[in-house]
Length: 383
Figure 1: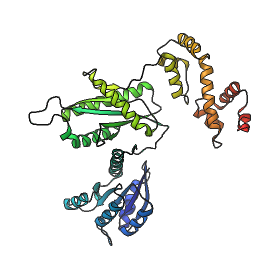
Figure 2: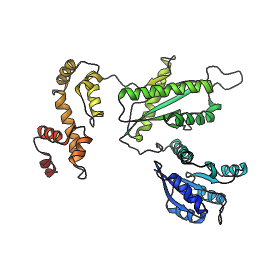
Figure 3: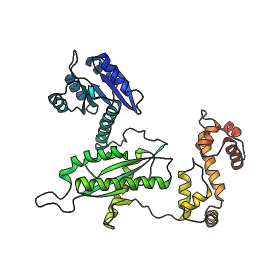
Figure 4: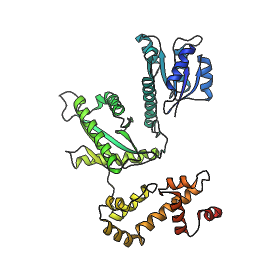
């Protein structure tokens, strides 16, 4: 959640700005103030992510407020909302390291939300460059989302004489351009660390099928390739990591994506490369698939198809490897998941059944007793 503080000595303006942000996802107005001094006192104990402030105010001027805030917390974002359509105001504010300048009479919810999130993302990317791993705007683990890191490399094939052949001179422009593309297509978040490759954290819904996720990434890469070649006249290659659900894994996945991008040297005609581990056999693939989808329904045909095998052949090989039928194996794994959730007394059996991929509560209860030899009630008494 992005925490916002608003400072404006005009009551109607202050209320209007807060009203525009009411109900906006991932943005929360923590506090509003009619003067800069009270805002500074609040921010000493309750740091926010972004300060929205007017410039012309009674008492402490907005410029002085910005200086004080930056002196105490240089990572806080500053967005100026002013009535003055005068470049000199904007220039002076930006010289103080303000992050944005909007005119009040042009404000609407969409514009304000976009600018706030843009500033927040920029601050988070700066923290990543300093060694802190974050993912803007989302929790470290969101069960509804899945991520992939895409390392982006691009260059001019032949530079004019006397000019740099690498894209160093275009890096700032490229960052702004890519930020705009990712925002336009809602692909994910760009990171541009001072050392190393630029990379994108692609964000997708967990509920998408494997094919839909693959189509999303392929389409995203194609759009980037087309627009970068058209606007910047540069070639692109994109190395993509495996899926992950916890953003703490970004550094590991960044290395995977870098290794994937290195495969360009084996196939220079391509531009999209996916990380490949040591190839697993069909049964290992099936087990991995089951573990990643335990919370879902797991039809036999889907599991066999994921391993590129017919159902009879798959069932025979699976039992030979594990000593269990697929149904036995899946039920045992799901029951283990049920046991973990039974420790949370706030969850009803119906909720646990839904969380662990059982069709209903009664079926979960029957499977649990068959696998463990005891009822759920007896199991809970033993804990």
